[in-house]
Length: 189
Length: 189
Image 1 (tube, each protein chain N blue to C red):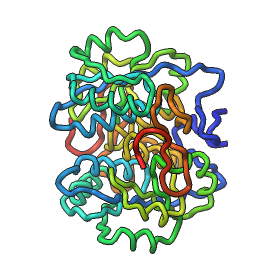
Image 2 (cartoon, rainbow over the protein chains, first blue to last red):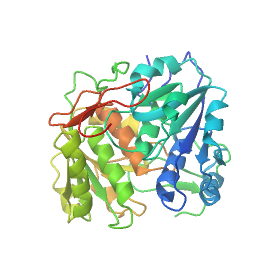
Image 3 (cartoon, chains in turn purple, red):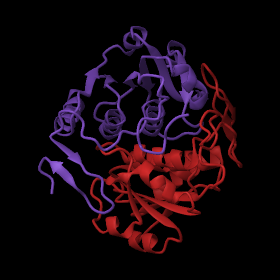
């Protein structure tokens, strides 16, 4: 069984963790920087290696890079000028997160052997051919909600909720507390 | 153990499901309607009963009500004029989701007996007394990410990922598909 009670990785210990990348399709530069920033930070916090962004948004990439600089790791927001080329050329399993797809828990066992996974997250309007180009179309719940929520739960089920250990390269990290805040390093009080 | 493989509720079958409400503190009317809308729809899709919103935002509540009208259920966005009164008067366990708190998986066993849970979600700036007023301060990961992601994973761990069955009162629902879209009822193609 998965080990869920101690906050550590929940993937079966017999399977090595896959490397997960995220592709955000349909970002609207200037219109939804906050939502896409939430997506990027969620991808990073839940263990994805990178987020490919279509269309590219260098300002957003820089803001996320500033977070990485403080909190550690090697996560990057990379430009995806041609998202179809990114999907077609991906050396691994492409999973499109959509409320119209198959239930996540039904597909998860098929993803267990995958060493590299690309999670594709659309906006409100998704190009129809994405459904065909993806190996799997997967739903996290079958109701309208949020691509941030879908990505978080998918990553949590693939990689687990990361524990409180500092990420390598971090200038600051948190110490979990029952009350209040404790930040080690950095400039925060 | 939890039952995770069939997409159904993952709480131990010996514990009845709690009724979960969400309190969003620090909403900025006009500034972040989309993020708070994502929070509300995530709350609904993952089985929360209601979202209390401070400060109130009747337009947002109406937009979410339109989703409920189509997709079913009794979820509501309700005004919380005085969030401290909402927290202090809550008849159940108040859990503040914050990256500074204790790991979710460490706190989950203590929540198992709870019949009513209030998940409090802040914005960028959280009133400091919230840390003291909440029974638990709980982190979903210990890195900066997104309140939408934190809420989704917390609800998923408390209530599971809802399956594809239509919600009572729904005028339309989805049928999960490996490719493309299938909506039953409503007006979508």
